[in-house]
Image (tube, rainbow, N blue to C red; front, side, top):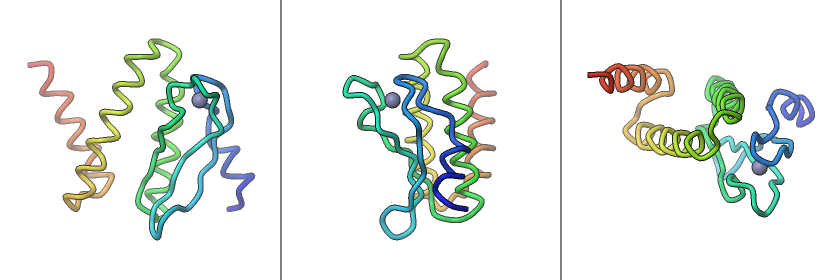
Length: 114
Ligand SMILES: [Zn+2]
């Protein structure tokens, strides 16, 4: 997949509207990043995932689902996005793959209703 195709797969930034692209960073991470406006809430934010084909697709889907939600409440949406991203990184360092993480997240969301 070339860069142009990857860019087309990603929704633009929900806050400033810049286009987003994915690149390989470090030795084994995918990163979603964009050329944000200086005052964009995501200006300094990067969204990374371990570098494997399924994680890459999961990252694209994760970004797009968040980007689609942002029009509702910017601050709340951003906080939820940042918190979930942090939980995913923690889970990754515990040896979890993204699928296990999503299952854990589903259980956590169920638990919140109690
Ligand atoms: Zn932006």
